[in-house]
Length: 232
Picture 1 (cartoon, rainbow, N blue to C red):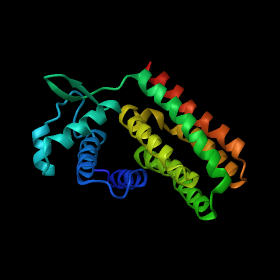
Picture 2: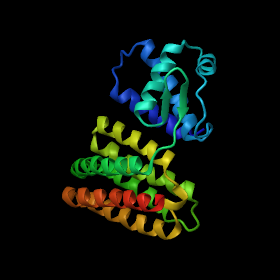
Picture 3: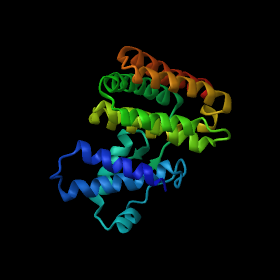
Picture 4: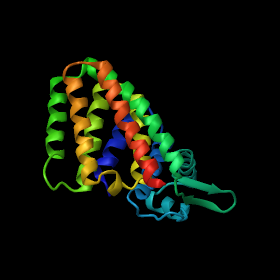
């Protein structure tokens, strides 16, 4: 289980929802995170049926919040629902992933533009530290991918645009679920990725919001076309 993802999901959910959220909504969110994390961690294979009764027993809740969570995950593209049959883990299409990455590129470009105007030194230091770890020789693909997400997440938080950050996190989860990260982060591609990250970092450090926006969108869109090419 990816504890960091569960923690970030919880923090974002608390940021974009009212403090006085009812018990019913909290149960629905718990069911949503329970199902989603098992899909993202590959505990359930493509085509696996979602056992609603089992989830109700594990989480000690009724069917209603579980069914609402399943409906939400269908809208997000993780599940398919066949009426009178059940819900199943679905295989995303390459075109769907491509379009989601294009959308993410636009949203991240907006966030880095805002971040460049208000980012604090402590956040710049955090980004620099993350980049230093990404540049370590022999880093694994999994570690690189996690640090890559940390790099972007610090920028998202610096922007102060919490609602948009929630949307991007959703698209990012989908990307990690649907894309072959071993192909996206091949060694020669890591070098290109690192160079782009450093350029984005320096634009943030200089407070150049226009350049930061341009670099970020180019960075994410490049990945979109890379994934499209790999999907063939």
